[in-house]
Amino acid sequence: MATTFIHGGTVVSSTGRQLLDVLIDDQKIVAVLEPGSTTLGADLASTADTVIDATGRYVIPGGIDGHTHMEMPFGGTTASDTFETGTRAAAWGGTTTIVDFVVQNPGMRLQDTVAAWHDKASGNCAVDYGFHQIIGGVDDDSLKGMAELVNEGITSFKLFMAYPGVFYSTDGQILRAFQEGAELGALMMMHAENGSAIDVLVEQAIARGDTAPYFHGTSRAWQMEEEATHRAIMLAHLTKAPLYIVHVSAKQAMQQVVTARDNGQNVFAETCPQYLYLSLEEQLGAPVFEGAKWVCSTPLRSRAEGHQDELWKYIRTGDVTTVATDHCPFCMKDQKEMGIGDFSKIPNGIGSVEHRMDLMFQGVKDGRLSLERWVDVCATTPARMFGMYPRKGIITAGADADVVIYDPNGHTSIGLGKTHHMNMDYSAWEGYEIDGHVDTVISRGTVIIDDGEYRGTKGHGQFIKRGLSQNLI
Ligand code: URP
Ligand code: ZN
Ligand code: ZN
Ligand code: ZN
Image (cartoon, rainbow, N blue to C red; front, side, top):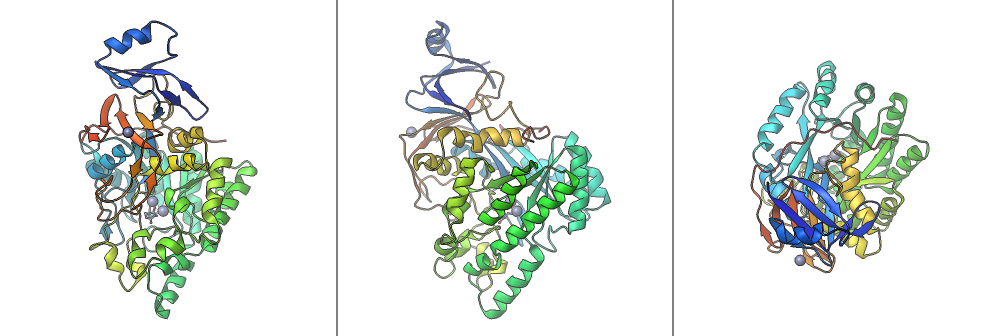
């Protein structure tokens, strides 16, 4: 069993930072030591199989991206990252666990869809992975299947108020699924946009000749996100289901979440780097068809309306609970291009799994969140939210040895040909310069990124059987 000793670094948790040494034995952290407190540290620095000097750098728990879609069939095509390419890109960026969405369409047995996702992921992942379940067809069978999935470590279920005819649930279906979720103690996740009203706005825009990507954003108006968020919160209140709103982009939707939380309801919000940094005007409104690169739902919001700054604020207040990517990559060629002349045919999604830790660290550098909150929203709270704590999300004895050594004085230039390992022919983050650098990534005791070198293997990543959420009020 190989030992790794990381010394001289500053271990950062969600509650503080301290100069500490970390001893890893095989796949686990076995000790966290105060430097100089015993002679053990000095001994280990010469006897451990691998010794890493982390002086001047942060030692943080590996990132947990709670929202990805690897090789997901969607929008008439399939998300371009496989579990192999997507988890390798995650590793490059300091993410050591992803939670991906199993997809169920009406009439499919949940158990069959889970088996299909295990087939796709098993033996292919560079880092650990768990699953959420999308229920696209709420009926007696799928509701019955939820309990079985919870026992198999799939403890969260996503429903859609968007995408009629694809994943959409009626309010009655949502009510029934929430009742079941409440009974099981499972986390109910919601894509909160009023899909049937949006479909009318989309149809009207296309009929007017407003076919460019920009109009994807304007037809998915913030009122549609606020309204759906409110409706989901009310249905959760009635049924006592814990509710997690995914990919919140509108400040008004956040106000609904804040009101519910202030009332003591188990309501949580996730946002994504694209909603913090990018906008309707600059990205979706880029010339000709360029805006297609940033077509995703919920859409990027207007900077003039100030959504981005408000979301950063809600990260500080704690009302945004986690930051995930909603990684759902499509290439421009042959995929996004399907929507030339009709934005509604552009497959929805942005790829960011590689850059979340860096982009959020830039928020630390810019004074938008603390170092501890960075670790919290990117690792510790996702671990608790999705029932993986304290195995994941913290540097402590007994935890999996998922560790990132992050250099706050390093530099990362994002873009094709620079740091890009996702299977996409463009970067949604081209030209972004980060004041920080992922130097070393350790996944369950194995060094998989070693300052600019990938040393991981496909199949190293294991399925994580998750427990119920540990983050409920
Ligand atoms: O545009 C997005 N978000 N694509 C992925 C599917 C979803 O709704 O999360
Ligand atoms: Zn969604
Ligand atoms: Zn998604
Ligand atoms: Zn470096």
